[in-house]
Image (cartoon, rainbow, N blue to C red):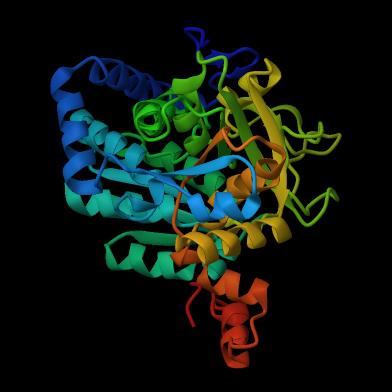
Length: 416
């Protein structure tokens, strides 16, 4: 699927300043060698198992399925990873690669904060310096994760330019890398950016789909009929989908952030409904939300991790080829899906993951009871407590706490 220049069809590639070329080539060579090295792979699996807690289970949602009256819903429980999300899979892999290359510092960008926390955790474990860039708006709505990053020894830099979200954090991280590449590694958290990052992140995240292909026949007697994953940048979706790509009887469904509406700035839909367009930015070619002059647009999602203007070139290609079906879920449906899972299964999902869940919940009543739907539960919802409480407007949620949720990160550093 990929050419030797890092392309997936017309998407991908490497559009970077000349100053970064040697660093990029070093990463490419180190990755190519590491994934063929039995000792590296053994160390990777050892850390996954003994530090992060893999393999994660698949859970059958019997009560939720009965409530919907149609297909059987299963969850791949990436929320049970150490740090509460799938992000740990990739961060452990790249962290070991950093040690292999002899570098001392990692740079990361984060939206929901899950990748930032995972990077800070692994940096502490491996003895690496860590700087995390995060949009100021995301610092505000995900401050619990910011607090933990700082306690882990990471430097968290609020980005106050542009829309103050993930897009802008990524820009700042690229600037840092350009100035510090000799001793720093840009630990990209999603399957975007210049080659080899889309391929590398997908390689480390593919453990999700590989485990699922083994677990579903044991639990359900067959591979799933449909597999769902939320799509921001695309790391959890690539990780789940790629091991299933050759299983033509398995439908792959990517779910983007429908936000509030289709109006500009009120959603993060790149691949559904033709709202994105081809462009080159942030080191790679993909479908971006942009205006007629090629200027990147503002985005919105109730889930900070999906609030991104671009998308993985791998997913853009698979969607263009028709192998992945793209759809979206709007904020209200996402909140309702999260509440249904909590009420019927006792599982608290991240708002990002709840997008995939919302799509499965919408499909399930229209399908036979012997249809099996597998949803990638990419993260847990602890980080979303303030956003959820504000969105639900629960009368039991005290007014002073509602005000706190809206105002708890007003200073430049995002602290009360």
